[in-house]
Amino acid sequence: MITENLGAKKKQLDWSNLDFNYRKTDYSFVSNWKNGAWDAGELTADHTITLSECAGIFHYCQEVFEGLKAYTTRDGDIVCFRPDLNARRMADSAERLVMPPYPQDRFVDAVEQVVRANAAWVPPFGSGATLYVRPLMIATGDVIGVKPADEYQFRILVTPVGPYFKGGAKPIRLCVARYDRAAPHGTGNIKAGLNYAMSLKSGMDAHAAGFAENLYLDSQSRTYVEETGGANVLFVDRSGKLVVPVSHTDSILPSITRRSLVQVARDLDVDVEERPVTWDEVASGAFVECGLCGTAAVISPVGEIHDDKDVVTFEEGHECMGPVMTRLRETLTGIQDGTVEDVHGWVHKIC
Image 1 (cartoon, rainbow, N blue to C red):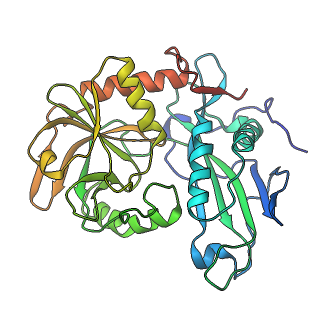
Image 2 (cartoon, rainbow, N blue to C red; image 1 turned 120 degrees about the vertical axis):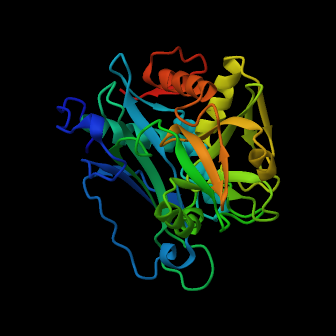
């Protein structure tokens, strides 16, 4: 049985110039749910999945996933960031889609196993790259009638990646989406592939028009700011306060990075306000900084948001990341890589 690969030499990659794409590594983790229970699970060198044409994933979209990172600290440890929260969120997502949650303690143990086994793929400290860890669960049992499947597979794949947005921390441009991402009281607050499928058309249209991402408004009134296709949104007002949009209809994904940044802001004595934010307020020029936050990007500064011919410019973050976002990002990444004290115990040492 494969347990670790800690002595292997680092792979010969151009770590500082990696893009955000899949690269096959040595091992994945796999566990199957059948007859009402999860099996023991194991590491595997097989990165393929063979399924029946009648598997539930193909017909009724029973699929959830997560995203977290493993990285090398200044002291040479391989760590990940708050995996217990990913485990909890994945369990919540699974329950919403009537899937058997993968036990949260076993989730963290599986992350440890697969990262240890792929230690040679964890980028070195200071490279700017990380090992992206993608847990996922799909319905594998046959199902024709509209109902939950009776068999499932949990997997974790890992792959080394560079920055999510080209240019790293260079401000990006958004456009207000013409499509909706999630229905009120629907599935917008869980991490399921079906939500991201809804954003693909809008995202491709945005890219074709020269934008990095879409900004989605609430689908009920198209009044309130929600999130983008792959990240939560943060604003800074003219007083230096961090303003975090929340949803009246529970349709924003609860980002672990956002939650951590809110705590970091409070630790730094930055005022924080979590509340609904209207698009009219953004368009009025009430905010001087804007950023997208998530596992992949941590914080990506937003320089402009376009709404047809109207353009909102964030004056303190237009040419480069603004001062508040910079401070938050540097503090959180410092906690992650071991250069800032981890007073909350967020960093989970793997090896």
